[in-house]
Image (tube, rainbow, N blue to C red; front, side, top):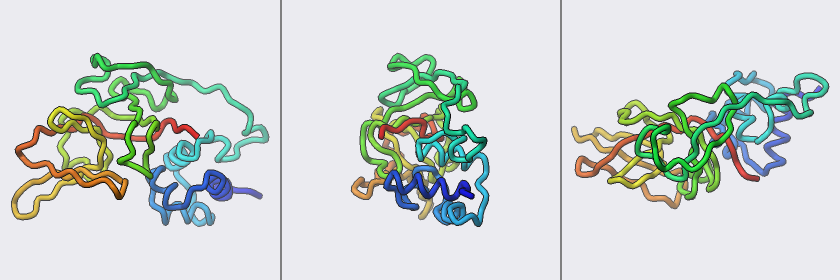
Length: 208
């Protein structure tokens, strides 16, 4: 009988993803993904959601619940403000708001918003035109989001990068990195005006 690991592997191959690529997009460890596909590990509900989003299929299809799990199901949704660039204020108050985007009810919160990507600095994890969910966290300390993809403002310019902090030599330096190997790290010292505006929590839409 086909199991969830079989469905993950089949859909991954259908999309042309390697295990490395799928693990990055879903935000999980590649060894964990391999164990799921080989039926050595049972994925947690959070992992199932992440894989379903990354593979662009309903969770019910991935799980295989019921004889009619492939049939379209009515989903309960809510709408969040959508931006084409990182807002410099609360989502509900920003004048940059372009439109509203529907998300599943459990993803909705008034301090979340959607951001449509336009650049390739985070490929292969995130691609141009991807829609991501961002938790508005103004002025959160970089040490608390080490390795996370964050919506940042650098000297007033928006950028989406992984945040890390280097405190070697007694000097604190913030380093912003893209997942694209061709993107140079951005080093932020005390002379730069820097703030974190939000933390990317999940991928909510991808064009195929």
